[in-house]
Image 1 (spheres, rainbow, N blue to C red):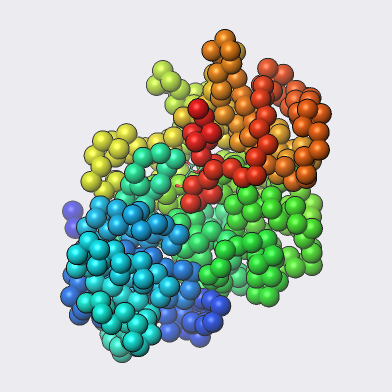
Image 2 (cartoon, rainbow, N blue to C red):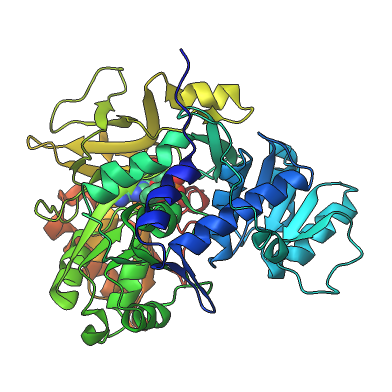
Length: 513
Ligand code: 3UK
């Protein structure tokens, strides 16, 4: 069967560059770009990439801060049929080198500030990948095969057509970190970007042309890529891109200065913001917030609504599924839960004995939908473990109730058996979180003197510790009041911070001994 021609970059740009050519699509700390200018620069960049020596299906590492250049380079590569691999700008040299080697990328596009690290990788390893960047004249002239993206953007090739890809052609990659093991190149298809925009952003968030989007999660994460690039382009809204780290102060200022209507954050940020005596007036334009990446504790969900006056929708997404597939809805909100499957996706919970869990039973979440990655690059064993035909395994334990509402119970490998029963570290964390002295908490299993696994809590306090024995007693009482009593932590350790992945997920395995 021959599939119709379909290029994701073309699909995202065509309509709005025609209908609302002069509207601002992206705005960063220094510049703005309209829908029409964006399309022109994407075509110019695509043309220049091909002319510089790259070919269809070549891979290119894209390591850039959140600026207007990101969407031009990402979409320009896709327009050319070249496969961009978005990577985290905070990675160390050896991780970046790993990804260049693993993917066999022919080239790198990076922000000016990251030129140094890639030039070093190139020289130290005698590699000949091309580097594309917005360098200033005189910068890094010593490195071979350097191209200035700003010059490429203005090449005047606006008749340059998109590559003849189809819905199922590989489009771009993201590296999935997981909590252990080497990062895996996750191959996404052309159809997936627009499917996330339609199924989640239009149907659940009700995105529209008047929306101003701001995501604290950066563009190189799947979460940020949807929030700040795919969704605003699809809706014809405006996306605010910010290079700096999203501190509570910065986020509040951006929201106020740019009159943001849709805000996307992660639970840790919501906790920090609510702990920061927010000026509620800053948030008047926000019509809806979104939380993902980790489960949003019930009390934070309620408190955000009480303080800000608009709702926050918790939803679970993954790098493998590209964006959110189970979510709360504006008129169907369940604080403390992930909500219901997003229409267009099907979810199931699989028990240890390989049968499906019924309501009230815990199982591992598997998901089916039109945005799943095709496979992990060059990792057949991991691919077969995660992608089972139409179903994609998440590695998460969930429980659903009779109303089909899904509640997170922790990563599969974080689950504990305490007193013979499955205990999710997450429910103990959620209980501890609701205590006024607790800022952040991670719970892991630890063996007691009888070699039985019991919960231990690592806690970051939001006050100075005065009397630890007294506080421990108080916390235990607090947990016993909320949960089945045997779930209370047998040990407490008060720490200044918790170990986390680059995407802000607690690395519980590092706390286990
Ligand atoms: C966890 C959640 C409970 C869960 C992501 C939105 O986080 C994203 O992708 P990652 O590949 O991680 C996936 C894993 O993170 N998780 C994410 N959201 C929630 N757990 N409640 C949630 N709301 O373990 C999942 O398997 O980094 C989030 C959109 C796109 C994404 N890629």
